[in-house]
Length: 267
Image 1 (spheres, rainbow, N blue to C red):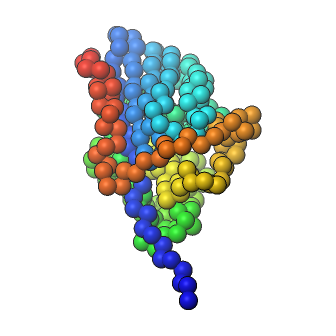
Image 2 (cartoon, helix red, strand yellow):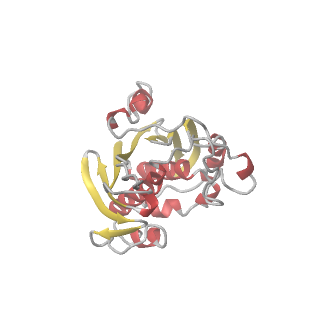
Image 3 (cartoon, rainbow, N blue to C red):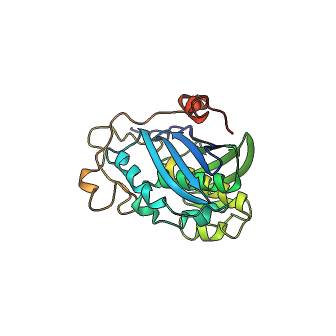
C-alpha cells in the first residue's frame, strides 16, 4: 500500500537589509540600501537636498523575473518627493503596484533614514515554517525580525494572519495592515512593515520555479513585472533562487565595500 509522503521541513527563509547614509556636500545627502534574500539581491541609492529626493537609482544583482531590472527606471517617480520620518507615510507617496515592490520599498526606507539622520541600520528577518508545513501559503510559521542585532518583533503567523502577540494578534497582513501600523510609533510601524514583506516573500520558499512545467504565474497587477502591459514578457530568470537557511552570514556579504561608500568616509 502506498502512503503519503511526510512533508519535508522547509527550513528558514532569511532576508537581510543593510542601510547607510552620508553627507555628500554641506547641502546634499545619500542613502544606500542593500537587500538580499532567497529570491532577490538589489542595491538602491537615494540622494536628497533640502529635504527632497533629487535622485533614486537601483542595481539588480539577482531577481526572479527577467522584467525586474527594468523597474529601476520607475524610481524616477520619487524625485521631488519629501523625506519623512514615517515609513508608512513615505510608502503612500507612490502607487507601489506600478513599481518593483522591493525597490520602491527600500528606496522609501532610505528616505526615512535620511529624514532621521540615521548613519547605519540593519534588519535581519527569519521566517521559519512549522515542521509539518506543506505549502507555505497554507502553513503556520514563526516570523522574527532583528534590528541592529536585537530582536524587535516575533510573530506567530497562520496563513496570512498573525495569531500572536498583541497588538498584532488577529490582524491580516494583507488587508488594512499598513493603516493599522500607521497608528503605532514610527520605529514600531517601520519594523512591522519590514517583517510583513518578509513573510510575503517567504511564500516562495520550497517552490522549485525552475522545474520543467512550473507555472509561469505572478501577482497579476500587483507589481511592475506583472502589470498587464508586461506580463507576457515576464519570464522566469532560471537559476536565480538561492538558499541562505544554513549560511545567513552570506547575505549582503558582497555589498560591504559598496555600503561603506567605496571606502569614503561618512562626513
